[in-house]
Structures are given as C-alpha cells and as structure tokens.
Length: 227
Image (spheres, rainbow, N blue to C red):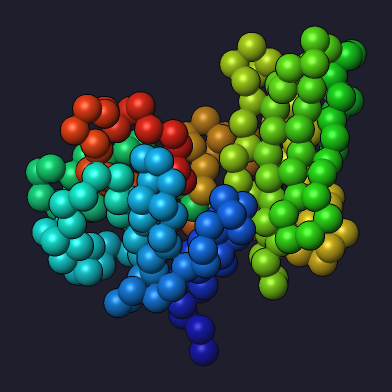
C-alpha cells in the first residue's frame, strides 16, 4: 500500500518531469535517492531535486564547487541550510502544491482592453494576457505529463496586478489541461502565488527549499526564479 512518503515522491517526480517540459530541457534522471536535471543555461547549470532532506544533499553540498548548481528539496529552508557548507546560499521559500479534479473556479471577465490567448497543442500550452497597449500583462504555462499537469511561470507584471489576470491565466490553462484529461495539477509556488492558488482550491503539500552557489560577481537575488 502506498505511503504518504511514496505519494510525495511521486508528486515531486511528476512536477520535475513537467518542469523539464516547460523549460525545454532534458528529462530528469535518477541520482541516488533524488533526481538530476542537466539544465545547461546561463545562471542555471544543473539542479538536484529530492523529496526530503536527504543525506545525499549533504554529500552534494561538500563536493560541488561550481556556480549555478541548485539543490532543491521538500524541506524547510532551515533543514536544508543545516545540511550544507557555508558557501551555499539560500533562495526564497517555495511551496509544493497540488490540486485534484475539483470544478474550476469561475473567473471574472478580463478588464476592458485586455485580451487572453492560448498557444501550443502538444505537451506544452502557454497563456498570455495582453494589455490595451499590446504589452504582456500576465502569462503562464502548463506541461501535460502522462497523468499530471504541471503549471509553471505564472507571472503577472507589477503594473497589472490585482486585476484578476493571474486567475484568468490559471483558469484558461486548467481548462485546456482538463480537456486533455489531466485533472490533477502540481506546481511550486512563491509566497505571493500560494495565496492565489489556495483561493483556487489548491492544497499545500510540502515546503520547498532551494540552495545555490552564486557566481563570483553575482548575488543570488539577481538570478531568475528557478522553482
């Protein structure tokens, strides 16, 4: 009989597969009791992901010296910090969240002049809301795995926040995922995003901690959000 730990491990792997599709990078491969993704992008060379504060994280923390390698785990920031040498820096807290097949919340109409469009018909669908001046106001992506839909990079520009655009993007992406038979969803949220997703019926599954070795001339706060 599957345990809660097994369920969390499966959720992490489903999210990581979807994240790799969304970011168009190689699929995750097993690494000890976790996974590795060779991202090979600027300020994001590689990531290791675990479903808990594994001893393997301590081994990686001692052996890795190159910049822009990320260690991620379902753990509090304090728990991950305690496993790593001092040269690792902590990123902002995140939250692993999931949703089931509950009905989609009603999304209010977009403000006048805003237009939402969906693109993509394969395993990656993108949504974008354009402002009246044609600039991008909000956007997001959903990767469709074998069973799970992974939601990624749900962003609303500061000048267009509190207009319901994030809710509209999520509703459009979820409708497309549901139409393709992926009712279960998973994502990693920022503290601000967590409030939105909880209002849409998503549930918190675990804290999400991230550590990285920043480049010599780069502060960790300058790096793009990796989730």
